[in-house]
Image 1 (cartoon, rainbow, N blue to C red):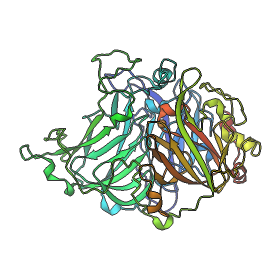
Image 2: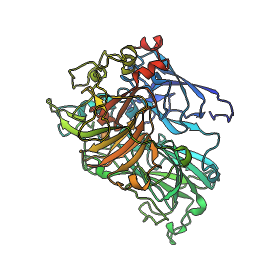
Image 3: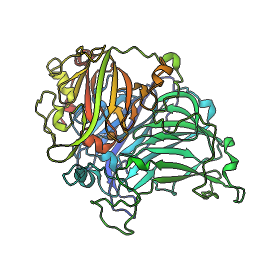
Image 4: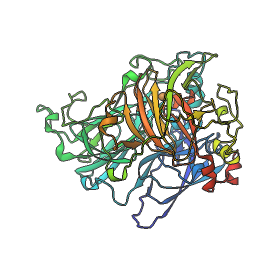
Length: 558
Ligand SMILES: [Cu+2]
């Protein structure tokens, strides 16, 4: 499974069979899995390699796989986003995804249809560099992929309740447990295998939750955020929101011996903690029983927001000798645990990180409200997105999620590049830069090469992780770090997920150098289903000039 270092770019071929498994004896829930494994298999390549991934759909329902973090520049139809770049792969059919492994870093793959990613269709995708920045600080690495566990099926049970008139307050389905690398709390043992210096790649594949991460007694040296290497930056803990990735290394010699009280035996293992943030849930998780819950033995069980994995220092899989509630000691820390975007980290390759000046502006106001049927919807600038909205020329929007026969946005760009019905940017009184316009259905036309400052104003009490397909964007500042815009001018950090604070804002900058149809959405699966989605339609004519044509094998899926 490991990729071979090579100076020449290689081709890496993989097959992913999408099928259901029922891996837990205590749960009858069928998981939607890649290659009969939860999470799915690790896919690795070197930067610049060509990945050829054959996805075989053995489910009784359609599917797709999105390669989260891959720019897909030149392979816009391989993004896996139903409605934007392709029609779903029907049951018993298959599709071959071919794309360049770029950019390098910690990426992942997940289902992008019918909430399958909330039911298990996730896996790590690691794109290695020939020379990894900061590699002199670690000798081995581990991947921890954290996810929400739900006892019930996402689409048929959870979503049908969430988006129903019996849930007018829009209470999101609250997870039943936390699961890391497919294991529940206190059952995942991470071996050091004698290594003193270990790199961890943390991938938050949760459908909903954000977590505070820490390892008892060890300072964490952050070296990569999403796929951007950073100058080593020491924290004692950090927050990771849905779809974000954080890499850090630890050095066992830095273990704070004071962490283990003198009265207990020396410990041969320490806890790795994922602490879900209780205040993000819309109910009191210590006593909440969801109305859709099926009584099962033992019942009721309540969501425990603290997940413990065990870092085993001697391969004996003993549990730590100190109590779980041991007071956290204070490490040297320059981190602010509230700074989910870790804005103070600086790019490792600053010389290559040229931040252009903005040429365009787009303000997006985020709200939630019940629609006329008393069903909660999420809105960007008062528009909620549903599959029918994928037809950019549809002027009346059916706000209920129904199956649409509209062709993917990308195909519409290719067939009518100048007839999409979206106005070009215009000057308005509120901005010194031309403002990006939409068709009123959530499709925003961005000229190729534009540098767009996007101001995300969150009028909702929840914190939302927004993800752009096709792009890394610079995070300029947020309402929690407004000073970052001045402090780090010219050295902003690129990520593909920005966490927008509760009732706050974030300002990001996107260089539109990748023509195509790219979804921009909240990565909380429930909010995406509620319509908190838009699409960036970038450079239709440049897309055609690059030689894009609709592949007959893809069109056949529609
Ligand atoms: Cu959200």
